Image (tube, rainbow over all chains, first blue to last red; front, side, top):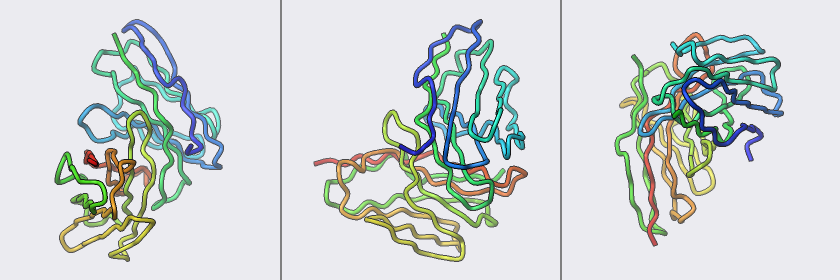
Length: 113
Length: 114
């Protein structure tokens, strides 16, 4: 266990559905991240939050909407997704400084049908 | 743009042998590198890291080597075990506004055979 918990572990949703992914950490970290992992591709950084403020949006389509209500929780709200959005979505957290490792959750396996 | 990439997508080794996984990076200003291991159905797990002021760092059964001249990073696993079978990613901290987010390579799949 890394101390970063993601729910749900698996999610199947239709293209017209709205769903949310949840990430929670109690490691005392103040930086949280969403990554997308597709088959045969590097992990793609989506969003970065430092001290609850979004500091990076890596050209992510607006059908993905992050929310960080506090330093321990991170959400990814999903609506009108496309089949190509099917992937493993990974949450990570770290101390908000350079040159430090990130701790990852187990991920949510998302399938858009 | 800057990138981190892996030389080989798959590596098959026999149990007990040593494994070497390689990684090339292009950002000469990168000063921190990490190796992660990802098992099937799990998120990436930290293995070992190294800062650019070092060229070698050892952990338990693992060694990371950094050659800044040729911008090359390697992970050596001694006496490879079946439990080492996983995908291995190198990552570095790019120069970006985020400052902290890691930039990942594509990954090398390590298969340990009996």
